[in-house]
Length: 307
Image (cartoon, rainbow, N blue to C red; front, side, top):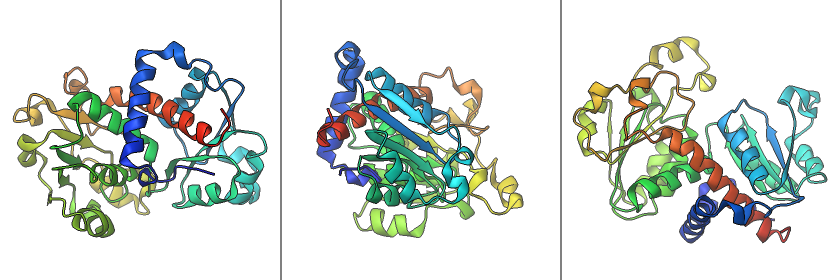
Protein backbone atom coordinates (compact mmCIF):
# COMPACT_ATOMS: atom_id res chain seq x y z
CA UNK A 1 0.00 0.00 0.00
CA UNK A 2 1.48 3.33 -1.08
CA UNK A 3 2.00 5.92 1.68
CA UNK A 4 3.89 9.21 1.80
CA UNK A 5 6.14 9.53 4.84
CA UNK A 6 8.93 11.66 3.36
CA UNK A 7 8.88 14.03 0.40
CA UNK A 8 11.56 11.79 -1.14
CA UNK A 9 8.88 9.10 -1.44
CA UNK A 10 7.71 11.17 -4.42
CA UNK A 11 9.80 11.39 -7.59
CA UNK A 12 10.35 14.74 -9.29
CA UNK A 13 7.95 13.55 -12.00
CA UNK A 14 5.31 12.84 -9.37
CA UNK A 15 5.88 16.26 -7.80
CA UNK A 16 5.35 17.85 -11.20
CA UNK A 17 2.14 15.84 -11.63
CA UNK A 18 0.86 16.87 -8.18
CA UNK A 19 1.57 20.52 -8.97
CA UNK A 20 -0.26 20.17 -12.30
CA UNK A 21 -3.25 18.61 -10.51
CA UNK A 22 -3.25 21.33 -7.84
CA UNK A 23 -3.19 24.04 -10.50
CA UNK A 24 -6.10 22.34 -12.28
CA UNK A 25 -8.02 22.21 -8.99
CA UNK A 26 -7.43 25.96 -8.58
CA UNK A 27 -8.67 26.64 -12.11
CA UNK A 28 -11.52 24.08 -12.22
CA UNK A 29 -12.74 23.33 -8.66
CA UNK A 30 -16.13 22.04 -9.81
CA UNK A 31 -14.41 19.21 -11.70
CA UNK A 32 -13.24 17.72 -8.38
CA UNK A 33 -16.21 18.34 -6.10
CA UNK A 34 -17.32 14.68 -6.13
CA UNK A 35 -13.95 13.02 -6.75
CA UNK A 36 -13.88 11.38 -3.30
CA UNK A 37 -17.61 10.95 -2.75
CA UNK A 38 -18.36 8.51 0.08
CA UNK A 39 -14.66 8.17 0.93
CA UNK A 40 -13.36 8.86 4.44
CA UNK A 41 -10.18 10.55 5.66
CA UNK A 42 -9.12 9.79 9.25
CA UNK A 43 -7.10 12.58 10.86
CA UNK A 44 -4.95 11.20 13.69
CA UNK A 45 -3.25 14.16 15.35
CA UNK A 46 -1.30 13.33 18.50
CA UNK A 47 0.14 16.86 18.53
CA UNK A 48 -1.59 20.28 18.28
CA UNK A 49 -2.24 21.67 14.80
CA UNK A 50 -4.36 24.33 13.16
CA UNK A 51 -3.36 24.72 9.51
CA UNK A 52 -2.31 21.16 8.73
CA UNK A 53 -5.30 19.48 10.32
CA UNK A 54 -7.87 21.94 8.99
CA UNK A 55 -6.37 21.96 5.51
CA UNK A 56 -6.52 18.15 5.33
CA UNK A 57 -10.14 18.27 6.46
CA UNK A 58 -11.02 21.10 4.05
CA UNK A 59 -9.25 19.22 1.25
CA UNK A 60 -11.32 16.08 1.80
CA UNK A 61 -14.59 17.98 2.10
CA UNK A 62 -13.88 19.90 -1.12
CA UNK A 63 -13.27 16.57 -2.86
CA UNK A 64 -16.75 15.47 -1.75
CA UNK A 65 -15.49 13.09 0.94
CA UNK A 66 -15.92 12.84 4.71
CA UNK A 67 -13.60 13.20 7.70
CA UNK A 68 -13.45 11.18 10.90
CA UNK A 69 -11.07 12.16 13.66
CA UNK A 70 -10.22 11.91 17.32
CA UNK A 71 -10.75 15.08 19.31
CA UNK A 72 -7.29 14.86 20.88
CA UNK A 73 -4.58 12.34 21.68
CA UNK A 74 -5.80 12.31 25.28
CA UNK A 75 -9.25 11.25 24.12
CA UNK A 76 -7.94 8.30 22.12
CA UNK A 77 -6.83 4.83 23.18
CA UNK A 78 -3.24 6.08 22.98
CA UNK A 79 -3.93 7.48 26.45
CA UNK A 80 -4.51 3.88 27.55
CA UNK A 81 -1.22 2.77 26.05
CA UNK A 82 -2.35 1.57 22.63
CA UNK A 83 0.52 1.37 20.16
CA UNK A 84 0.70 3.43 16.98
CA UNK A 85 0.62 0.21 14.95
CA UNK A 86 -2.57 -1.01 16.63
CA UNK A 87 -4.20 2.39 16.19
CA UNK A 88 -3.37 2.33 12.47
CA UNK A 89 -4.75 -1.20 12.06
CA UNK A 90 -7.94 -0.20 13.86
CA UNK A 91 -8.50 2.98 11.87
CA UNK A 92 -7.90 1.02 8.64
CA UNK A 93 -11.23 -0.66 9.38
CA UNK A 94 -13.09 2.66 9.34
CA UNK A 95 -11.41 4.94 6.79
CA UNK A 96 -9.95 4.95 3.28
CA UNK A 97 -6.87 7.07 4.03
CA UNK A 98 -5.07 8.42 7.13
CA UNK A 99 -3.35 11.75 7.78
CA UNK A 100 -1.24 11.43 10.93
CA UNK A 101 0.80 13.81 13.07
CA UNK A 102 2.86 12.51 15.96
CA UNK A 103 5.58 13.98 18.20
CA UNK A 104 7.83 10.92 17.83
CA UNK A 105 10.08 10.69 14.80
CA UNK A 106 9.32 7.56 12.80
CA UNK A 107 5.80 7.12 14.14
CA UNK A 108 4.22 7.72 10.73
CA UNK A 109 6.40 5.00 9.20
CA UNK A 110 5.31 2.56 11.90
CA UNK A 111 1.68 3.43 11.15
CA UNK A 112 2.18 3.02 7.39
CA UNK A 113 3.68 -0.44 7.82
CA UNK A 114 0.74 -1.55 9.97
CA UNK A 115 -2.14 0.13 8.11
CA UNK A 116 -4.10 -1.44 5.27
CA UNK A 117 -4.81 1.97 3.76
CA UNK A 118 -2.54 4.85 2.64
CA UNK A 119 -0.95 6.95 5.37
CA UNK A 120 0.17 10.54 4.88
CA UNK A 121 2.73 11.87 7.33
CA UNK A 122 1.41 15.20 8.63
CA UNK A 123 4.58 15.76 10.66
CA UNK A 124 6.60 13.43 12.88
CA UNK A 125 8.62 15.20 15.55
CA UNK A 126 11.58 17.09 14.12
CA UNK A 127 11.91 14.68 11.21
CA UNK A 128 9.68 15.35 8.19
CA UNK A 129 6.62 17.30 7.13
CA UNK A 130 6.14 16.31 3.48
CA UNK A 131 2.77 17.96 2.86
CA UNK A 132 4.08 21.29 4.14
CA UNK A 133 6.85 20.86 1.59
CA UNK A 134 4.23 20.25 -1.10
CA UNK A 135 2.62 23.55 -0.08
CA UNK A 136 6.04 25.20 -0.23
CA UNK A 137 6.77 23.78 -3.67
CA UNK A 138 3.47 24.94 -5.15
CA UNK A 139 4.09 28.40 -3.70
CA UNK A 140 7.61 28.55 -5.15
CA UNK A 141 6.37 27.35 -8.52
CA UNK A 142 3.52 29.85 -8.68
CA UNK A 143 5.76 32.71 -7.55
CA UNK A 144 8.91 31.89 -9.55
CA UNK A 145 7.65 29.74 -12.43
CA UNK A 146 10.45 27.22 -11.93
CA UNK A 147 12.43 25.33 -9.29
CA UNK A 148 15.79 25.95 -10.94
CA UNK A 149 18.37 28.72 -10.51
CA UNK A 150 17.28 29.86 -7.05
CA UNK A 151 19.12 31.02 -3.95
CA UNK A 152 17.11 29.99 -0.91
CA UNK A 153 17.67 31.46 2.51
CA UNK A 154 16.49 29.33 5.44
CA UNK A 155 16.36 31.31 8.67
CA UNK A 156 15.70 30.49 12.32
CA UNK A 157 15.42 27.01 13.81
CA UNK A 158 17.23 24.85 11.27
CA UNK A 159 18.03 22.10 13.79
CA UNK A 160 14.52 21.00 14.81
CA UNK A 161 12.63 22.47 11.86
CA UNK A 162 11.13 19.49 10.04
CA UNK A 163 9.80 21.81 7.31
CA UNK A 164 13.36 22.99 6.65
CA UNK A 165 14.74 19.45 6.38
CA UNK A 166 11.98 18.42 3.99
CA UNK A 167 12.41 21.51 1.80
CA UNK A 168 16.18 20.97 1.54
CA UNK A 169 15.55 17.39 0.43
CA UNK A 170 12.99 18.44 -2.15
CA UNK A 171 14.83 21.42 -3.65
CA UNK A 172 18.15 19.58 -3.76
CA UNK A 173 16.84 17.63 -6.75
CA UNK A 174 16.65 20.70 -8.99
CA UNK A 175 19.34 22.53 -10.97
CA UNK A 176 21.56 25.39 -9.84
CA UNK A 177 20.16 25.65 -6.32
CA UNK A 178 22.10 27.38 -3.55
CA UNK A 179 21.19 27.44 0.13
CA UNK A 180 22.02 30.16 2.65
CA UNK A 181 21.58 28.69 6.15
CA UNK A 182 20.93 31.47 8.69
CA UNK A 183 20.70 30.47 12.34
CA UNK A 184 22.25 30.76 15.80
CA UNK A 185 25.12 28.33 16.35
CA UNK A 186 22.88 26.22 18.60
CA UNK A 187 20.21 25.77 15.91
CA UNK A 188 22.29 24.97 12.83
CA UNK A 189 21.16 22.43 10.24
CA UNK A 190 21.99 18.94 11.54
CA UNK A 191 25.25 17.51 10.25
CA UNK A 192 23.48 14.51 8.71
CA UNK A 193 21.41 16.83 6.46
CA UNK A 194 24.56 18.59 5.28
CA UNK A 195 26.48 15.36 4.82
CA UNK A 196 23.76 13.16 3.29
CA UNK A 197 22.06 15.77 1.11
CA UNK A 198 24.03 18.94 0.45
CA UNK A 199 27.55 17.53 0.36
CA UNK A 200 26.68 14.27 -1.41
CA UNK A 201 24.89 16.21 -4.15
CA UNK A 202 27.54 18.96 -4.20
CA UNK A 203 24.97 21.66 -3.63
CA UNK A 204 26.58 24.97 -2.66
CA UNK A 205 25.62 26.35 0.73
CA UNK A 206 26.89 28.84 3.24
CA UNK A 207 26.19 29.08 6.96
CA UNK A 208 25.86 32.43 8.65
CA UNK A 209 24.34 34.07 11.69
CA UNK A 210 23.72 37.38 9.86
CA UNK A 211 20.34 37.69 8.11
CA UNK A 212 20.85 41.23 6.82
CA UNK A 213 24.21 40.42 5.27
CA UNK A 214 22.68 37.47 3.38
CA UNK A 215 19.53 39.32 2.28
CA UNK A 216 20.63 40.88 -1.07
CA UNK A 217 21.32 37.56 -2.81
CA UNK A 218 18.16 35.72 -1.78
CA UNK A 219 15.37 34.77 -4.19
CA UNK A 220 13.42 33.09 -1.38
CA UNK A 221 13.56 33.77 2.36
CA UNK A 222 12.04 30.93 4.38
CA UNK A 223 11.54 32.06 7.97
CA UNK A 224 10.85 29.63 10.81
CA UNK A 225 9.93 30.01 14.45
CA UNK A 226 12.07 28.72 17.29
CA UNK A 227 9.92 25.83 18.49
CA UNK A 228 9.35 25.81 22.23
CA UNK A 229 7.99 22.24 22.10
CA UNK A 230 11.33 20.88 20.82
CA UNK A 231 13.38 22.25 23.73
CA UNK A 232 14.15 20.36 26.90
CA UNK A 233 15.51 23.48 28.58
CA UNK A 234 13.23 26.52 28.95
CA UNK A 235 16.21 28.83 29.47
CA UNK A 236 17.69 27.84 26.11
CA UNK A 237 14.36 28.50 24.39
CA UNK A 238 13.97 31.95 25.98
CA UNK A 239 17.53 32.85 25.03
CA UNK A 240 17.10 31.88 21.37
CA UNK A 241 13.44 32.57 20.59
CA UNK A 242 13.95 36.12 19.30
CA UNK A 243 17.18 35.47 17.40
CA UNK A 244 15.68 36.71 14.12
CA UNK A 245 12.78 39.11 13.69
CA UNK A 246 12.07 40.18 10.11
CA UNK A 247 11.07 43.84 9.87
CA UNK A 248 10.57 46.20 6.90
CA UNK A 249 13.96 47.77 7.69
CA UNK A 250 15.72 44.45 7.21
CA UNK A 251 14.20 44.15 3.73
CA UNK A 252 15.66 47.42 2.44
CA UNK A 253 18.42 45.59 0.53
CA UNK A 254 16.28 42.63 -0.54
CA UNK A 255 15.42 41.86 -4.16
CA UNK A 256 12.15 43.42 -5.35
CA UNK A 257 10.88 39.96 -6.32
CA UNK A 258 11.96 38.21 -3.11
CA UNK A 259 9.41 35.63 -1.91
CA UNK A 260 9.01 35.61 1.88
CA UNK A 261 7.75 32.27 3.17
CA UNK A 262 6.97 30.78 6.57
CA UNK A 263 5.33 27.44 7.44
CA UNK A 264 3.40 29.11 10.29
CA UNK A 265 2.44 29.52 13.03
CA UNK A 266 4.58 32.58 13.54
CA UNK A 267 5.19 34.02 16.96
CA UNK A 268 7.07 37.26 16.38
CA UNK A 269 9.74 36.30 13.83
CA UNK A 270 7.94 38.22 11.06
CA UNK A 271 6.57 41.66 11.87
CA UNK A 272 2.89 42.10 11.00
CA UNK A 273 4.03 45.22 9.13
CA UNK A 274 5.29 42.88 6.40
CA UNK A 275 1.90 41.21 5.85
CA UNK A 276 0.88 43.81 3.26
CA UNK A 277 4.21 43.65 1.42
CA UNK A 278 3.60 42.05 -2.02
CA UNK A 279 6.60 39.82 -1.36
CA UNK A 280 4.89 38.15 1.62
CA UNK A 281 3.76 34.66 0.57
CA UNK A 282 3.06 32.87 3.84
CA UNK A 283 -0.72 33.08 3.70
CA UNK A 284 -0.58 32.00 0.06
CA UNK A 285 1.29 28.94 1.36
CA UNK A 286 -1.65 28.14 3.64
CA UNK A 287 -4.09 28.07 0.71
CA UNK A 288 -1.63 26.21 -1.52
CA UNK A 289 -1.33 23.55 1.18
CA UNK A 290 -5.01 22.72 0.82
CA UNK A 291 -4.72 22.32 -2.96
CA UNK A 292 -1.64 20.10 -2.73
CA UNK A 293 -3.25 17.93 -0.06
CA UNK A 294 -6.26 17.55 -2.33
CA UNK A 295 -3.94 16.46 -5.13
CA UNK A 296 -2.09 13.99 -2.88
CA UNK A 297 -5.28 12.45 -1.48
CA UNK A 298 -6.53 11.93 -5.04
CA UNK A 299 -3.25 10.36 -6.13
CA UNK A 300 -3.04 7.89 -3.23
CA UNK A 301 -6.69 6.84 -3.41
CA UNK A 302 -6.39 6.29 -7.17
CA UNK A 303 -3.24 4.18 -6.70
CA UNK A 304 -5.02 2.18 -3.99
CA UNK A 305 -7.87 1.52 -6.42
CA UNK A 306 -10.35 3.16 -4.05
CA UNK A 307 -11.55 5.79 -6.51
